Length: 244
Image 1 (cartoon, rainbow, N blue to C red):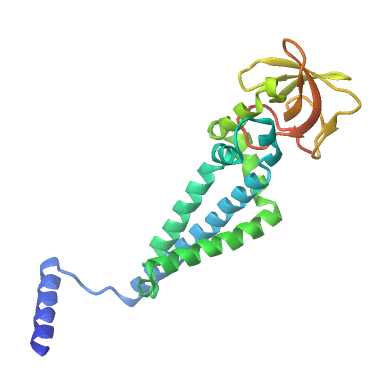
Image 2 (image 1 turned 30 degrees about the horizontal axis):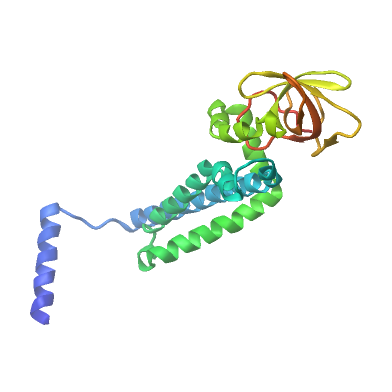
């Protein structure tokens, strides 16, 4: 055994000499350790913010909408899940794990342990951030500032724009006393008839630029009778946000 240990030591010494490896100073080790912890912390916090958006979008996914469609609930979930945020969350969990491996004690823990702990912390932070309102704030900011963000969720707008099935989505371009005019994601104009029985969900002010989902009944040509109006969550249409 001692001979084997000696051979391993000689081989290691030979590699050190060949690669000219020299020990790092204590301050360098401390700096790298703190940088690794800092990166891990940053990735976990950002992951928590991403998870808060996932919670927000899933909670506001118009779950009652699939009853108006021919699709099953499973198909509805597959089409409407916020894949961008889910993939981003997975990436951030992995980056947090990867950076934690460079900490002083990180190498001692198994892959599954680090990934599980990272995901758990992300979920806890995500719930906290969502309760504060960060999920809605982040989603609204990206919606208003990043044009490409709209196209990530265009399927939701397509699903809502099925007037033959009593579904319509668009942003308001004009408002009259008992009628709205909207444009859908295909840039088609629709005259929306309102009556005293129409239900308006959410704290919204009916105004030009507001993006809305409408449940109702197609009349003829581009006329649509609204039975329920709700704010659009899930993107895919453009126009000024009118949430109050």
